[in-house]
Length: 119
Ligand SMILES: [Zn+2]
Image 1 (tube, helix red, strand yellow):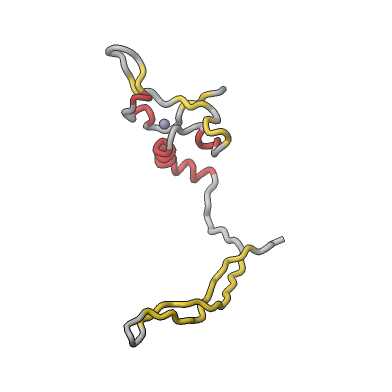
Image 2 (cartoon, rainbow, N blue to C red):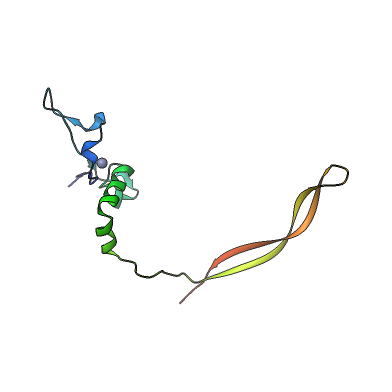
């Protein structure tokens, strides 16, 4: 199969020219047909089945409880890290008594989150 129908539940109700099919008095708005891998492999698991973000979000909104049931999360996950704090000299600007801007050194703290090998 090289095409899929957009899975957005409301795709066929959006009033765009690209959805109009039929002739004369028998026109309809039809679900968008998606060519597989239209963006190469970029997020193909999603964009092979949804014509745009609105349709994706409509699907998630409509089916959120079923989606949640696929992989329920009953407790928080945690990633071990190390938090490193280091002092370094920086500058800030202050007005001095002569009404001039003055560069004043001070010790600042830089906080960095580092990954931890947990094997
Ligand atoms: Zn759609």
